[in-house]
Image 1 (tube, rainbow, N blue to C red):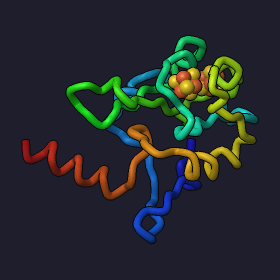
Image 2 (cartoon, rainbow, N blue to C red; image 1 turned 45 degrees about the horizontal axis):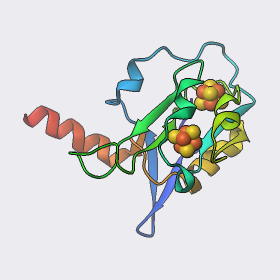
Image 3 (tube, helix red, strand yellow; image 1 turned 120 degrees about the vertical axis):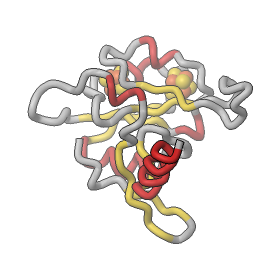
Length: 140
Ligand code: SF4
Ligand code: SF4
């Protein structure tokens, strides 16, 4: 996926969002085929309870958990996010979510929806954060 369209308003500045190269999802198989899917799924995280039901039905394992804020109890207030680079648009998750908080979007509209509806992401991060992580890895 091109993440060129991913931006996020952050403290009045528009952040450029890129794939997090350090996320374990990057080790999973990439989406096959040259054409992107017509539809992509986006989690409206404000309505997500972190119940994990959607994860079971994803045929390509492209739904990732986002741990809650307390590292000692990461399941508390956890949520999920979808790897847009790997989603094939099958719609299983949007049909399975009991809270109807996963919405299917036309491919190009999904990036705008992601920006508006994502509260916590570990798959896609501010490009400046990538540099910070690289530096902290080198200095360890
Ligand atoms: S639409 Fe299908 S492939 Fe995409 S995240 Fe949902 S279940 Fe997975
Ligand atoms: S099924 Fe819905 S509420 Fe449950 S984790 Fe998935 S998106 Fe969140």
